Length: 155
Image (cartoon, rainbow, N blue to C red; front, top):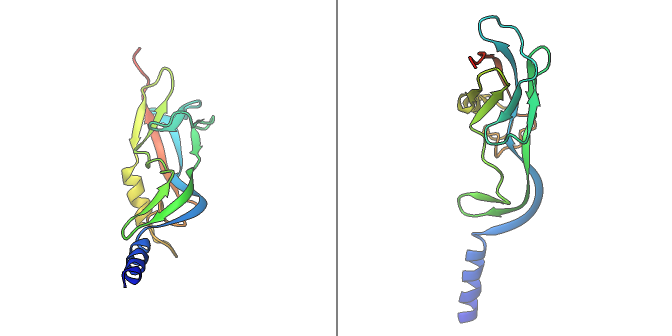
């Protein structure tokens, strides 16, 4: 009787937390496209460093026409742990960046908040899957921020 009860308890508790080895790339930031232009003249600005806030090791420079494409960021996940509520990834992927930073000598640094763009991405109708790109099988999450205006610094 004790053995049967023990096996029953182990089966029930063992079913609550299930680690499953998995190797996958988890999207931590969407692809971001845009243009950088001078405030007032709308002339394109080449050579502006564009990166996610807090991740300045991965960046792009704007082209002659002021355009840039910051590629989608992903992290490697080796293990998924399924619990009654959340699914836990290990190692834990980086958090979604909150802002985009644009920098160039002689120009004021500009920061663009990304939450409004994420909201647009989440509300975009999808033919399948969850509308939350961080945990869904979206193949190509992309945000186009349009024109960003930089001002020359006074110094």
